[in-house]
Length: 557
Image (cartoon, rainbow, N blue to C red; front, side, top):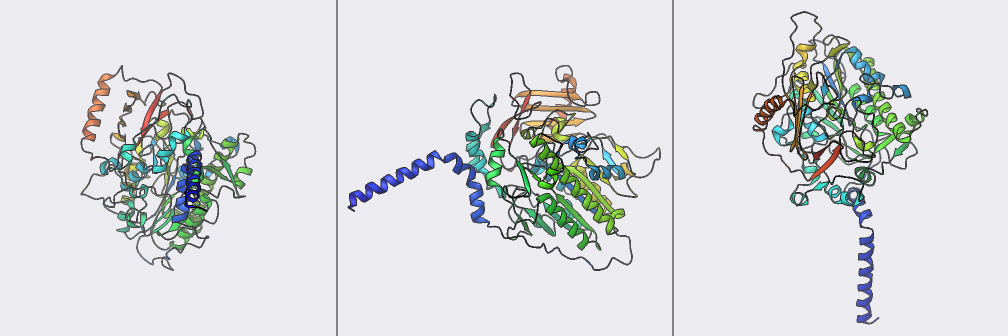
């Protein structure tokens, strides 16, 4: 072959390769994160988790402080739990175990998540502080997702555009470097000071570097969910539901992996369906630590997308004809089974009378799963500050300290968990920073005395960049720049936010805006910018056709 022919042939091959890459650019882009994950973090087969062993015998003297277990669901809607709405009880997917916590303790009738999205909500729960006080205003987005969205959203599918800020993304740190600063003091750190053994299982989403992971944020042990599949997509033990109308779903399937790690070690595959696996490991950790006080943060991935059900749960709900709804109900069923196993283990080990158990969700259910009933009777979804995005299942029990069957109507937030459990453990709160949460124990005691204290009125705030909300004495206000609008609702008379009173009660709007401005003046800049603004219809699921006049907000991320 002559040199001229060689260069001609090489040039032709390069042109053909470039053309192939261009024609397959969407496929390559949407699969890139998963491929890179497999290269950087090859998964080992499942192996036992070496939970640190507590004492072989219980303490012989002295009063032992209560064990504390916080079980957090992911994206679980208000109506998914039988206690609050009914959910899928009529279809065979009731939640009797979650309900039993309320029966044996307290049901918070106005239980709010600290945000309408995961990272912000979880950072607030861990610290008892609005996460905007330390610059965590947005949930990190993998860079490839930002690049991919324009390709996955078909022309004409949305009446409102997604706004991307690629110029901001250029200087953005890597996904794993964005999270809760180690300078924050977590509930785990405060409980360690009281001699607690602290354990995290499941989702974290507060940063993935060594400095930001649970082991550097107060947890002695961490069984860390590294990615987001409940089982491999082609497993015979799983039933999948893909939402082709959701661009985020299109990103998750090729890029998520079935993997966990222990104490920041190598990735390995769970033994079974993720919800059941985390539950079994929680049971093992409880048994191992039964003779010393422990704090367990069981942060489930369920019922977040991708929608994957254990086949046994899917098969048990054959009366549900709609496939997507059946998969989702099966996921709810597995979550309730998890709570039941934890409660049963506590009873078997003689720990149930001295353990605080709290169950809640990080935010309401999203509209992008295409199920309109998940947050009923409330309007709105995850990512919005309407009640559907913020009202969550929120129940707790502590035998001998919280009266069974208590109905607590005063608004509470996930920021209240830290001060409440630290007080129960006999600990003290930091004095060098603002703690926004409230210790609820004085208001939940067993006494029925007439002079029992009543929780004082306080404002509750939510922050998503230029979209903010607050609640004070029953008045709920939302303000946004895109669209430039104010919503004002009197929840005492209009709990489902149907009548916007912003124009009629300008006096009330002015008062609340002044309070919000004073609150904002104390907040630092965000640690990282919003790189994405996405329209969220308030009253429609993502698969429903948008129409002129639909009410919407723009969520910043």
